[in-house]
Length: 242
Length: 246
View (cartoon, rainbow over the protein chains, first blue to last red):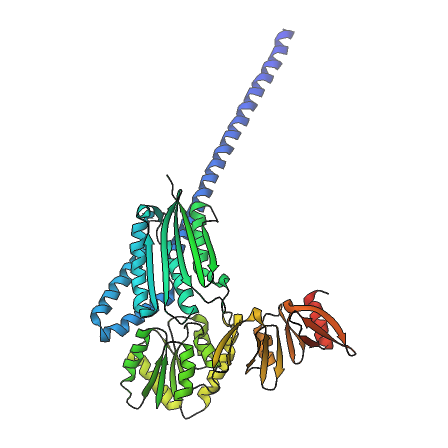
């Protein structure tokens, strides 16, 4: 009888211990699940914020460009209505491009260059003979991928820097090459080293490009600028994901 | 009456030209591509009114006006510039936002024709120039006229400034340039961490200083990298000590 009483204490003890173990395990399991859900929610929020920022960065349109283009159209309507109409189509196509929703979408260099031509055609109407461009693209990089609308702000920065830093006619050079697993695009514009320090060139236009590259590739070394005599050179490297 | 159009975009000039045709009393004397041409043309034609773009190559519209002793009546034209628009409004200077209608243009001309007999307009332009000179974009460099040429001096290249009658002498490694401004104008304009007013008539770029020497009683002299010596008053000495952390 004494043995039974004794063993019942032990049995109670064991039962109690097992119950305790189960409770702890349950608690652990639920906490972990909750943690996981919280992490997921956090990641989702971060992704949304990242996407929103990327969209905003891509969509950044210089109000100067828009209003001056509209002013050019207004002037053309009187003298060259056909040209005015053409410019309205070009401007519309350009604006539609900036409004596309699919974020992070990679496009071929060929498509990106077509879009860039649209932008350059508008700028050439505005600035007349002062602006000319040379685009060199190696055949093997035409199908290489890059984030859409990445090059336009780089070229816009080069045009602004070039056109407002000298009173001469300027040529903007854009060249694309394949280098290992990278697509390299180099944009060159003239500037006057006597009156402006090159650091001015890495203005707002380029910092948004830098930020985009960081958000997409988590790297800060994909955009480089340097000056060589009176040339300001911007180089963008885009990793090709195999 | 004579008018000038100063704008770097050919089409922007052509629309003003078109609108001006409705005012036979106004003769378009010249169209200018940039501020350099503008300065020359203003001297040559002495226009009654100019249509002036702000964002232009090398020197902007404001910097161009600063180079002219008696700027003519000015109607500014710009596409977008929050800072400038605020300045226009607070100084009652007329401006046209591109693209602008013929009606809006006519209104600006009528307003000018109504006011042109008075000097108010010119005073407004002067105070406007004072105001925009303080804008962040303009405090990086100083535009001066030297002989027949226009020189752009980045502020970091200034060694020191010296008051000289109604002018301020800007000393650089290429010699000195005169600007029709006051010392207090520059004191407001330039970064106080780099330029210190060491004396009633002197302001020095502290990055150019090599040493400081006593000079007469209670006053000092700083010697610059170029070898130039700049006087330091008693109050100037206290300021300098503070900036240099001595």
